[in-house]
Length: 155
Image (tube, rainbow, N blue to C red; front, side, top):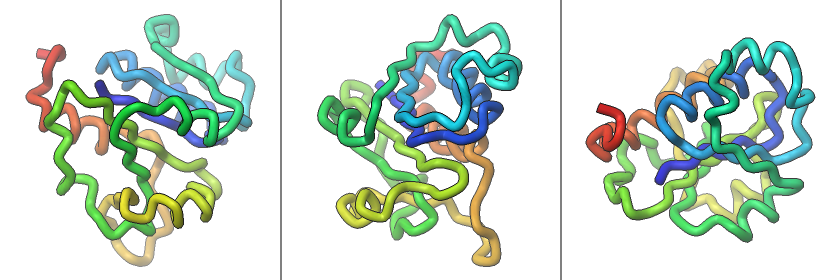
């Protein structure tokens, strides 16, 4: 199963769009607090449309709390990664795949990037750019995993 993990997301529209993508792909969403918005935020609900109720979402008070329960492969998405997301093998549908994304304004904490440096993955982009939109990044990585899994359960 695929899982999307958002570490302290700041922008409700991104989280809403990501929630909608997760609902459409039957992907579990994990949100690590603090969130930069209220879960009842109108922008979150507008971006997530009426799909939020179909979403399988779990909240955590810290990244440590999340990591304690994660039972599968961890993939940390960061521009500091040396591995490219599309070169990983996600084809095992019996395994849990956790794709962990940092907050929009600061990314992942340095101690997490250091501890999991062999699990850091990047998306190719021009060196003059700081980052891509979080919702777009989640969609790229998630759909690569789903493609490798033969779009199981979606076609």
